[in-house]
Length: 108
Image 1 (spheres, rainbow, N blue to C red):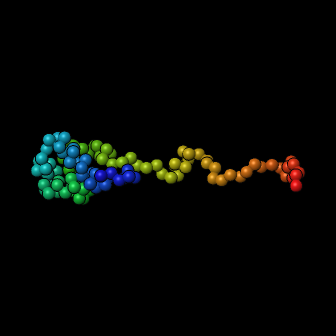
Image 2 (cartoon, one colour; image 1 turned 180 degrees about the vertical axis):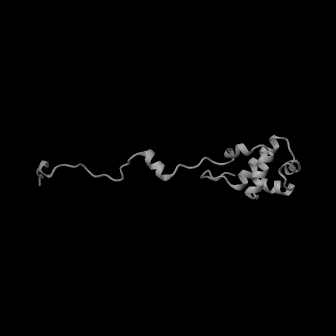
Image 3 (cartoon, rainbow, N blue to C red; image 1 turned 90 degrees about the horizontal axis):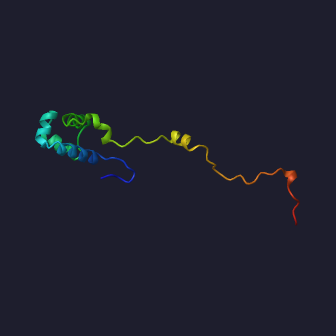
């Protein structure tokens, strides 16, 4: 499941991998043979419990390697870039600036 901060978990990746396999109408055994891994490795990958090497091998077997970016969230904007995009924001009020000589005398 996706967390509230849009982070993709290993379980999310496994679920996407499983969906890609099912879309091709392949069994776990067929996928394992194509990837050169065991059926248990495919099963574990679909649970989000695989090494990157196994995950990528399965992606290749499912002809999904070119789609790897679709399995990952877009990279976040860096704080520096975000600050540049937002421009200069005021951080505090400075009050009105009047020359001391232009002030009207107090009514006290």
